[in-house]
Length: 206
Image (tube, rainbow, N blue to C red; front, side, top):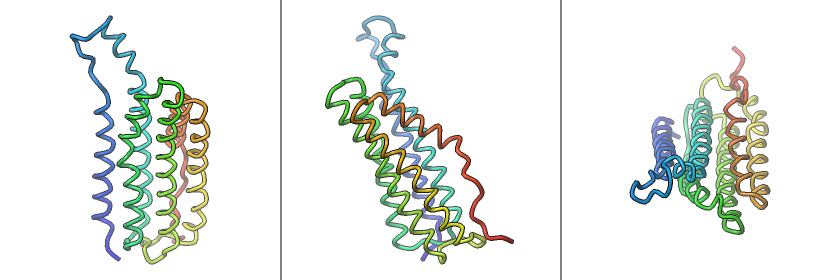
């Protein structure tokens, strides 16, 4: 086992790069190629702006939740390191999925459906990876920081993992029918997590 500092720093770096790369998909209209006003040209780019805002919020929420999980840990072992890497692998692909989704959001037909499924599937995979990490550390009292109640933490596993898995699985179903509704669903999920009351940490009684 080892301390969590290097793992947290590495994870923060990956999350910071992923959230920053999102802005690269926001294109400035070329002045010489404008057909109509600049406002019209910017308006045509709304899928990129909507996908950017949604993915930015979702990555931010991942960072907040990741920080909360690592606050519970006093040490980390090899298995937890690899589970954390699995989570980060999904996060690193979010800019790609966001760009793909924005490009085909209004295309209609199978192209829009495929892009929506890729986007939703990636977030479902992220939620599953987060669940695996949380379940693993919750079942390893030796990894927990001083004062964390392992019994209370194990009881929180279902609450922590079920909601995300169900919500992102639901977006997979929505993606089959409407790409734009899928993006709206992800935005609503982001708002839900922004305002969700997570309750107190599972600390041992003093």
